Length: 227
Ligand code: C5P
Image 1 (tube, helix red, strand yellow):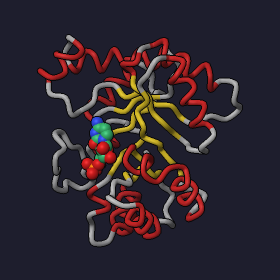
Image 2 (cartoon, helix red, strand yellow; image 1 turned 180 degrees about the vertical axis):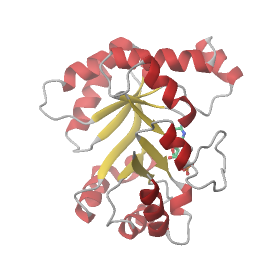
Image 3 (tube, protein in one colour; image 1 turned 90 degrees about the horizontal axis):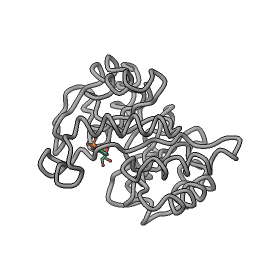
């Protein structure tokens, strides 16, 4: 299991200060829409300058028509990131076109599918997808696997069943982690490191428990000791 730290601080400088504090660790860093839209590719380069061994997960959740998604995926290839994600609800044709477009490159980033956004409650989800969350999330995972993606973003509670209905090598990346039972904030269903390990999660995403800590490096070290 790998640790992926969410760079969700309000300014670029604060994100860079955090990265400097944890630069000696073998970890992934998650760059989301806010940071990428504001700080762009230059920020990605600065991360690699701090430590070239950092792995970068570009969390932009692409969703568009298949050709536009494939074009965007190809542009992402040029950024030198190690993982990015697209929405499974864009459909199998879109996912397949993305993977097809990347197949001509010798080395490509890991591509994950977003299944069901966890911010939806059941009622809101049904209004959009006319299905229960669990059923649709499973179907999205199957679609992503059949379309050649490497894995999905999901809750730690879904990780094991997703591996069962796809295969054990199909990756799961799970946010909503409170490594040692810390305050859950606005997350609904949180899991700790022990649970994530038992659920065979491949990547845990941790934000606030690290960047709001007095000593982020200490928390990172403790998580790495336990995974
Ligand atoms: O601070 P915290 O550890 O809750 O941060 C989790 C990170 O994972 C945030 O960047 C959040 O946007 C992201 N995320 C999430 N739930 C999802 C998808 C992404 O919490 N379903």
